[in-house]
Length: 352
Ligand code: 3EB
Image (cartoon, rainbow, N blue to C red; front, side, top):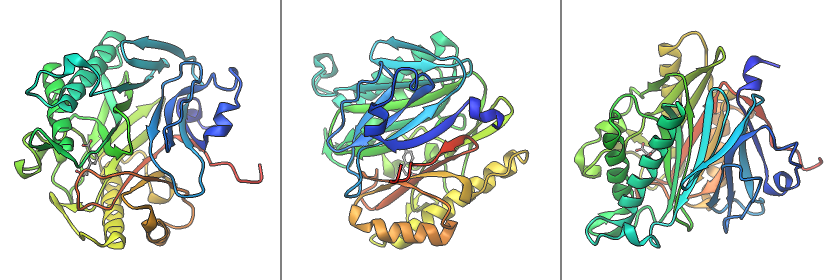
């Protein structure tokens, strides 16, 4: 067992297998996500497992992505946030119903923007109270990401609320920001999961891309607050979280309408982020063929094409999770995220 086995291990498995586990078998769960359409009500010992409404490729079952830690863990709840923490890591999950909260409606600011600001403020309050001050990775999901209300696209509303919360907590909105993704779910409120650490995180940028926190205002009045990747050392092991990565070079979308070319561009961007991580921290050499991948497709009918391009580019060793989601720009067809340096438990073979 490598040292990091005890700190962080990713397991991908069907929800039905997770639901059958005993309390004892679940004791190592730090947190995670369950993707199903419609969302699956998993009630597993108050664990912070976000329930995301996303379709999977037929005939796949609901899929869970579970982060384990062999360190002693403690569970808790603060307001809407359910969390679980080890000595070094805290995983939290929350879901806010942006429409039903009456206090969210002041008639001027879009409810999603207010819900986002409230969610991130609650996250920062928790992290500051508990001493896990470095936000490493955030998974953001909400419905209708490309729809417009209050004369502004919902993804842009989200970006305003997110940046407001960072500023309200005196956090930087450039450079030292978390790795993240933001995707359109099939339904549901604002659903956020996050992983924070007690130790410093190194934010990694992509030399091929304008940093998202410096995107020009044509993409919205407030820039997105995320880094291209976050790198952290956990008990001597370097762990890398690569943000959702799309077919964007500079700040522009490339290959509109061409899913194969978009996929190759995503992978070139991920390769550039990996190179950058290896340059910034030469102690650990990350490589594409050892990362764990999750792929969001606007249209699941493109799955075979995207998988083929990934296999050609990376090799056959990978087994990505594929999900249907709307991407934050209408012309993007695919977004790919990845992580590495942690232990993994492969998806179980059907013969189990
Ligand atoms: C991009 O590069 C594509 O708003 O948190 C990727 C990862 C994207 C994270 C976010 C958005 C986010 O701009 C979109």
